[in-house]
Length: 338
View: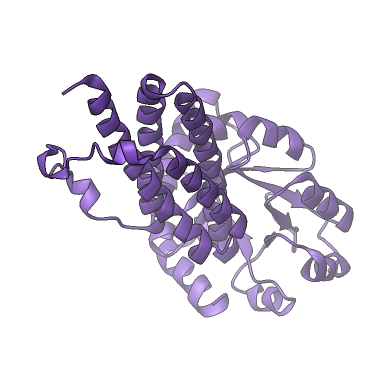
């Protein structure tokens, strides 16, 4: 058996794997996300792979004698979420394309170049899918917890996550960078264990270092566009706003969500003026991205806040100082914001 025939077998097997993997991703883009632009990108890649999947390459197939047919791994047998399924297939596509790129160089002068281009398209597609997935979680979340310094931080956070929390922002102003990084990394891992988004307050560098899902910036922090250049397109960026001009600037700058407040006076920012009702009305009628009301929201005023048209809230003390963070989180989601 000559080398050309063996190379054809390798190309055939990996063309099949890549095309099948792309089709799995394509179906979710089409039916799950309903994003025709992403589905079209997948379709174009499949068609380009089909162009190279010639009858000559197909004729080299020998499934009955392929020693890899029965090879499997326990992790391949079950998937626990759409995200896990998509990630597995994206990895499968990328691995196959790398094999095709290298062996394709031996088969046809243009084959390696073509597969390299497709491989980079898959990387871009992966970033887009991650962004859509995280933005969907962001849109559906009713409670957003912002941490405050406490010795019992991890227990409080995990308790709230068990109660259904899906977004956590780690905010810490008075800590050295080494400790900050260590805490952020552990909190990020904890959030991802519960399929929750992990956001870092202000520190773009920390967010990048721990693979956070996003960063939240204030009006005096690094500009949104600069943060986007550093973090890339898939990372969530949130921004605090107190008036319509700040909201417009945040949305036009590329923010994925905004904080609206403070709704009430709060010990965290005692000098900051509460927002006026006309701004809240403006946000409710004009904001095109998710927005979270924030500032002094507690059990005594939450119904009044919701009556103003608020559907998503950010809290600190209400959960961080609760006797049972799990139960208060459940109650907020089920009894107030369902």
